[in-house]
Image (cartoon, rainbow, N blue to C red; front, side, top):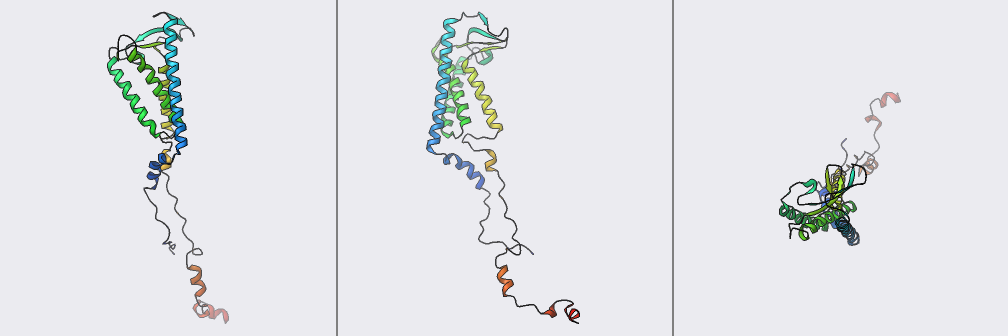
Length: 235
């Protein structure tokens, strides 16, 4: 017998999951959002301050081009002025790198308004602080406005020389990869939250079917003659 369907049961909405993901950002409390934005801002300021203070120290304490070993040939201090990007790439393209850094800053600040995840707040703070740290050099250091050379002094073997801002940017990239692999969205929602298969109500058995009990109680008692073999049994 086919299970009796309850006409009052709501039909499953295939768009419910997607609406839950879209509405997740709106469901974050204002207090929680303020806390995340404060965390994002504090990390940005800490990274920016650490980068600029360390560069100021390097300029006053290190001789340009002279390497000071700290871990043998693996790591040391060597002051240089970099007109290109990390790993000394794109030398002579300072204007382009300045524009790219400005675009990154604008995108991160705009996206931060949707923050709903502590992990993304940390990643955005590291990224923005690192981008601003190098951007300050681009704007205010020699040889001129928007053409300034970035101060690098952390020498990693014979591979490249970087700074604190570069460390923050690399850490942000790694954190973003972890969040993406875990399916954590910018608003804090996980990808699986919007793709859960709605549970299907179990089939209603004959004993639980609406109206089934009443129908059985209202039926008249069956005549023995309707039962096959009843006459033979009485005989």
